[in-house]
Figure 1 (cartoon, rainbow over the protein chains, first blue to last red):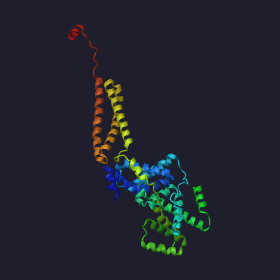
Figure 2: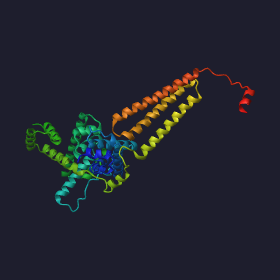
Figure 3: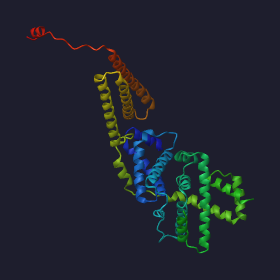
Figure 4: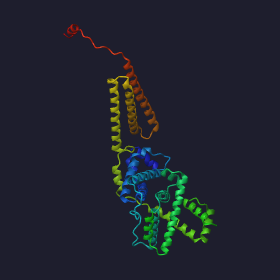
Length: 198
Length: 190
């Protein structure tokens, strides 16, 4: 069933219809919050606050937006406000390894995948926020360009430009990392240097 | 074939808009350019792995959240209610203040202040109406608008009428002090 159906049920007073929406979008909200705030506990708090906000403002939901774009926009705005309040300008290293899974006892292919995921994650975390958020919305959460424009309240040209630049930076960083790995330069040292420069 | 053109194709490939003909040309280029081939492999891996890297909050998250929701959407629970009460209180206070002027201070000099208070009352009233409409009509903006306009007109007319009465009262000639005939009064009372 689609989101609109659940939203209509919610607006008719059926509280339980909100649960499927939470189940579907909790990953999106939590991941976006974590990739913006870098702290698990803060991301969990924001996730809860966002869903409470969505519930309270569900009657304001406009069909022009997809629900995914609408909830992304609420999450991003909430995170921006939180960062503003805290005056957080620097990404903290904590939480960067959030998505890394334990590699012990896994088959070789999965170990290699986990390694690659860790590299990709580190490279994404190293992107400036203006590039990180659009690329995550596109590649991680599968939002279209139009949906990203609405989520970030930016024109299409700017969104396309940011995603383009993010990919360019990402490709450069990942290639550099591969080269360093071949040359025996430690990944930890590379990450530390990147974060230090950032 | 240059690498810059291939980069454009790679971008289109990641967007899912690359044509078959261009894809063939891109693959041909990869045969001659290991750097571009490696970049494409890396970008494809990133594109593939990123959706798998979505993290979710704890298992208990959904049940905790569902318990915190108030009964109907569109209500900010206690916050909305307290906001409404504060607005209503402000509205009543302003209204009473305005009426106080009308009843007790009917001088021309006070008309301006009276109108100020009336306008404050109107603003407060409109805010109150907005909240009431939120509760009653939910998402139907036409119903809001119609009811809001109607109530606004009533409030404005009342305010204007009160102001006119105040000014008219100011023009009423003052009556002198009452004179009593003690004998007549005694007869009536007894």
